[in-house]
Image 1 (cartoon, rainbow, N blue to C red):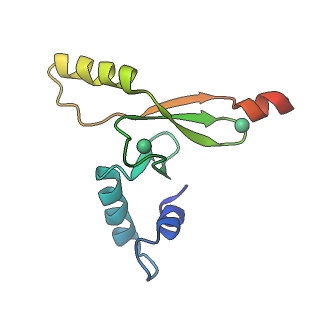
Image 2 (cartoon, protein in one colour; image 1 turned 90 degrees about the vertical axis):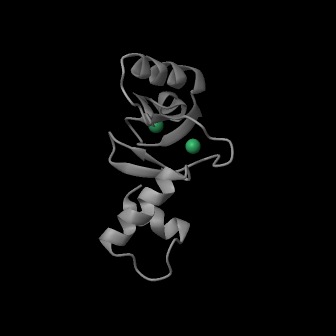
Length: 108
Ligand SMILES: [Zn+2]
Ligand SMILES: [Zn+2]
């Protein structure tokens, strides 16, 4: 989802969002864990479980472009810990896994 689509869906602002406002609002939503940013797709996804989500992972289908949020707490913690061990002040990381979703495998 692009920045405008997600803002429309979340109804952050009643007026038509202008780019700087849109990106500030998205930054706020990302910081508060309501929205995740997918670097590879340059897109934003509303969090599936804003109350319980700590470390998000995403599976991205190469064929239908479906994005699904998955839990990957263990591996993500490991990644951030490894970063910290090397003296890096890690803030966040989002796992993105490319592949073919179950539906596309069936229809192939
Ligand atoms: Zn989430
Ligand atoms: Zn698919």
